Length: 112
Length: 114
Image (cartoon, rainbow over all chains, first blue to last red; front, side, top):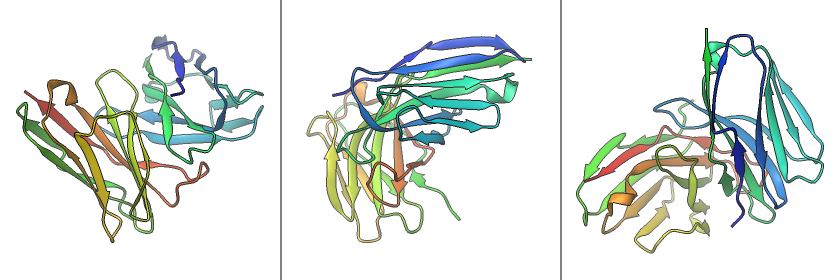
């Protein structure tokens, strides 16, 4: 079973600050997805990256897939209180379709 | 369009009992997956069904079983409940089962085993 390690586990920052969340594995993934989960709700897909070195931007969020497709990062610029939530990375193992392995999550709190 | 719907939203059971959780996928989606999310952790894969066939099974005991019906809805059954089965059970649907077919999650069923 492949493992995805996310860091940091918890992050508390002030509004306007920048932050980066990391997702690392020793194994290769066909694709990697980032989700955000609010309390009492299911995860909501933010982005899917499939090509090594790929960078995708979603407003203030920038996602990067490592060249070797083993790691990924999520960078948030000028964080806002509305960004508060649990951020999860999830990888699809090679030949496993969309059966996902999730990281442990990063709980982000942005204080006004 | 309705998203993935799960029922019930909350459930309290006693150790040793049996539970059935239900999931209705987004219309047109043919794949349903089940995940267990223990408090403070990321979701863990339990089962995936595509076109009513089991496509994959995670590292869970045989007490866990599932099925997909002709209308693509799904049930997750857990027998002989243990305290450690307390978790949020998430259902996700997707158009297909390929790596580029994104999952759409429901809001889960919160199961508490006492």
